[in-house]
Image (cartoon, rainbow, N blue to C red; front, side, top):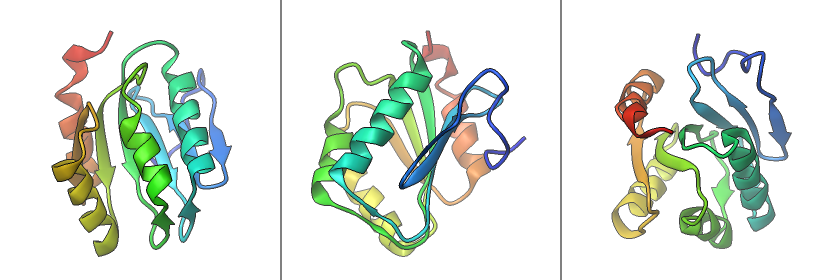
Length: 139
């Protein structure tokens, strides 16, 4: 089953203004950002809190899909990147659709220390394969 399918029966799905967040059948947490949204600090906080809740006190792998269009405010970006303490995410794969998102993600990876592995992908399959290399580091 791919990430566009339903969440597993034993986990909830969280829908916030900017995204749909759920656990895939393989246990990877998934964030689907909606199209053409402006991500605010409040949105970033809600997204982070949903991921922490779904991780349920365990380390997690995160697969994120950026929506087409849209932007992320600097404070929102900085909040997510700076969340190191108590952040359950040990590896984050971002599947970007637009050139603007690819440029932004590459900037984050190169110049900001997120305290976790982050990598940009254009294909979901490649992102999942990379995330699976971190399974041995999960609780």
